[in-house]
Length: 330
Ligand SMILES: NC(=O)C[C@H](N)C(=O)O
View (tube, rainbow, N blue to C red):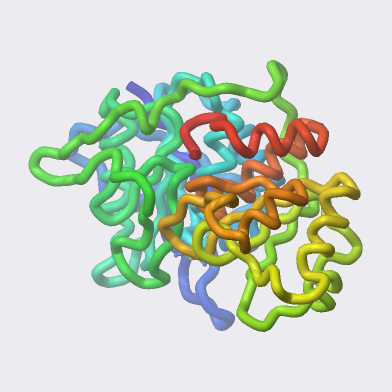
């Protein structure tokens, strides 16, 4: 068994600087010490990406750099060390691009740097390596705290808690313990459907997210969405409802859709199932051609739109794909 550990940046390998935390720790030496005398001694090999970043600086080019690094390594499994801020976006992005790949990818990071007293870094890396070498999980998963989660179902729920991530609509794939408890293996499956046989590389696309608030006006919505982006995610209320009584509000969305922009309605609820016909305030959105995000997380929706746009699909193909799963994201 050979596990390739790829460091991309993030708090886990950061050190203090006059300007706050920045990448720079001796990860190689730390990993050797962590694994010495364990079953994983000699199994894991570390690679660092040339551009180590705080994950707040990640773009789709960084998702692609991770995919390229994975491709360049000959390993049975991969552990990606990543910043927590945008880890769920990366996990979702990797999951779409790796449909059909047989080696599991487990992404992890930490709230405190590896050298900080009481750091969660060692525990998270051990957990991720344990999951990656278990033979029980496929696809892309995320290990954090005591839980292994389906990568494209996750969201960062705490900026400080050691259980910093959750998959709000499905149970964890596994809970660490003595012994680990595993749930359904299908949720981390590699199987999936791809919109194209030949998958193109991630590129940056203009996908905009708008959060609705009580009192938002049609003028403000139009201003936010002018010029028209390539795709729009509206974070609506509850099951996908909007202020439909606001004069001109739905017209702004109607104009976007008729101009060929896919508009996806997601929910501000962390645990959501978008059903656009449930209320009149959501039905108006379905009528003008919006599609609902079902139970996908914002991160899964955003990465999916960038993925589909990167494949060069048309607006109607994108709308169709938003309503069917690529690999367990809905
Ligand atoms: N805990 C972390 O890793 C946060 C850091 N800002 C990052 O996302 O890179």
